[in-house]
Length: 367
Image (cartoon, rainbow, N blue to C red):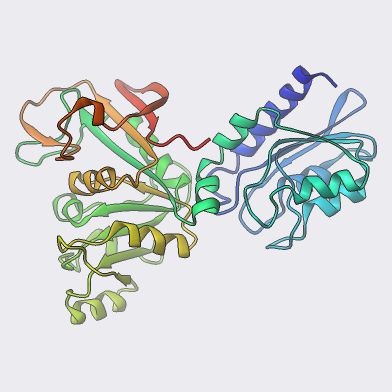
């Protein structure tokens, strides 16, 4: 099989893997294709967390015996028991001639062991086919599994002159309806969404997925003084979407009990020197709760704090063709006085939604 053919089938596996986006976390998205005698005889992808992995679905869907085939899989087959049995054992039992793997699994429980098991049973193994692409679709998983901290995406909409609200604080709506549908899809594909208490007080958002088909993320509010009104919309529908209020030990204990009565969880963390929530500790705690990806929708104070602490991995900026003049900036003071010290970005994608321009960039090179 030529390298070009290997890449073509791996591209197919990647497209399959993307179908699981938003449904499989904290597991990775994985796709698999089985090729034999000049045709695809089976394919599959990881559909939902806790269910069968991509390789198993592909094997189950195979139209004929897999013996002597080539199996293409975007990520190294697992070799340990988790929610499901090891995929590598099922592959070995199916007796393919060759397995082509996009990238190795960073999980220490796998990390080359799946590849070694295949080779030990006489199966030819090729690795690194479209490796960068196979890593990029699972950047949240790679960050989480290696650091036990969530992959952090900052997202905001701004005018062309860099304002997220007018001088009076009015911000609805900066972006177009297509951009807002895109924002709701971002919510679906992240495990949790985070805002500061200022956003709750000014906008009273629901922070749910309503404009696209998808699941609601865990909603997190940073509220060091526990100022959130008990009538806030984000507190009213815990059966549909859970909310976590993050506060400090200076908060009112009686109000914590009232939040509990509403079914709302509260996380108490130590305050930093400024009296605010320690964001490093917060991300550690979220990682402990298996939150692999976090979408931050503001406001300016939260965005600025995460950038200042170098805790953001991805930045999605929606730029509307509007000018307001004086207003609220998306990012505040970072104490950068020399352009050489400016935060550098890697532009991954630039595209349009409606009349808006969207820039999808990375702050840290992960691969």
